[in-house]
Length: 119
Image 1 (spheres, helix red, strand yellow):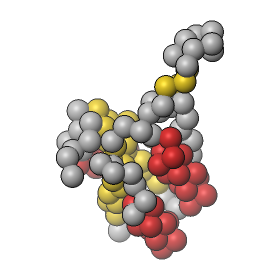
Image 2 (cartoon, rainbow, N blue to C red):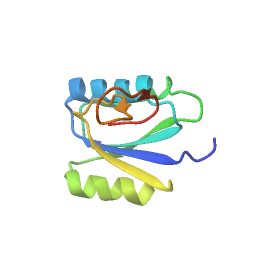
Image 3 (cartoon, helix red, strand yellow):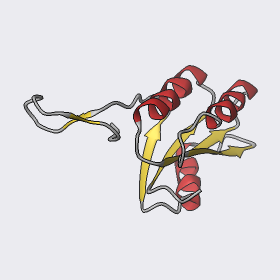
Image 4 (cartoon, helix red, strand yellow):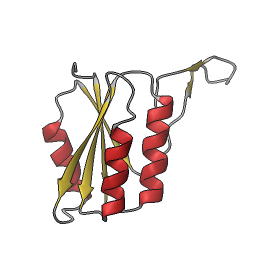
């Protein structure tokens, strides 16, 4: 696989409901190639199981890479771990409680929605 232009770094410990909503919104709404670098700060097994399953459903040219920590190293160290792993020219740092969507192309709201743009 070619390296995508954007890596999305998400750091979380547990909170599977938020993690699922976040990842599913990225999978459903992002048309550009991406890689999610998910830094798992020692979550329970159900979070790891979900992430491995979600990785099998990534669109072509996109992926999910799980960086699992044996202990909770905290958000800042987790973000730095993701940044060190990234090789993309663009990086998005996101919390696992966000849901992505489409961005309007005009301030009036009358413009077209642009698929593939996040947040």
